[in-house]
Image (cartoon, rainbow, N blue to C red; front, side, top):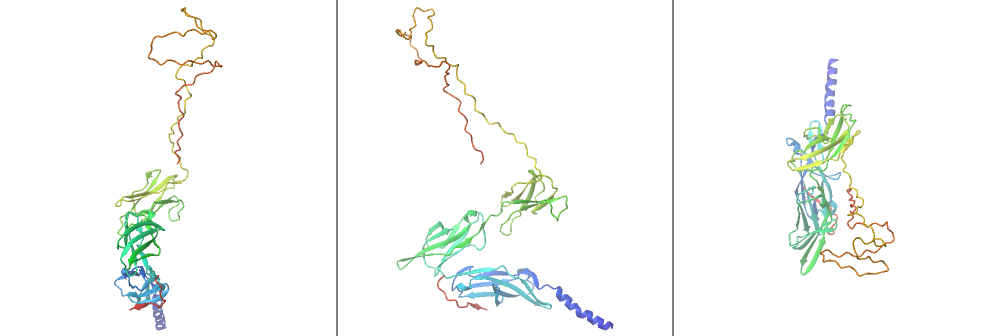
Length: 400
């Protein structure tokens, strides 16, 4: 009885062990392009290599796929005399036979190959270009003729033109505005005849090294105590490896809450206030602030408002002038009589003077009229402060 029980226990142990072993290893295969490019002419060759760099101590067999179809097994995949129909995404995967069965790695990141049957190909960077870098583009022409002129277009608009046989374009100090769809036109002469071809458009992605942060306030986070809240600073950091560190700061009412940290979040008491965060890469001289975000009832700070100047009322430069009376005043201490309106007299003579002579004042009908000053204060102006070659569809050949 005891012996039978012992055999039953032993027979069940392997079953338990096998069920606990995962069929997928925590490694990912990697594709390396040894020959060719991601965009080639029909008839050209591409060589790809697969490896599992995270586990170089084990011996892996590599499986190759195009889409979901398995096409080859081996370390390298050589595709020669490529045709347009062979365009697509290629994957590889590591597999290893063990005592407990086959173990597979994760599939690699796909390698997309585009086979062009035309005359011109614009080769662009396979990875996003970062702001401030120099971007190099190559306009390849089938059979490599001696080029006379090259034109580069972005979104259908010419951005560069150059003479000579060099097929390369170099755009310096790239900005986000350089993101777009590019194509090239090549012109050459053969036997006194001019030939001109244009490539198929290719997309170019331009990214900022450090994007503007966005602050998220999470007042009720189940991962933190009830009497605290979480502040999360969201941003993208796209520097090349090895990338210098980025420091994150959090502020409340413009006062720093924490010291510099590589963490994108912080836990603080849920006090009302105006919060924001800052991302800083000291080595690159980059600093980006988030927009302010209010939490709770925020007290508005008092601001001193300067009074708006108002125009003053018009004020005469001197005493108001009284129009002369129609009746002349009586003579005072003089034997010369004043003339009336009906009796003209000879105008009196005066000694020479340096002052300009006065003009005669005409009588007015209303006696209460006042003289307006010549220099009246102008009203201030209000300023607004707001403010493919033809090709057969034969199967491609695989060199093993």
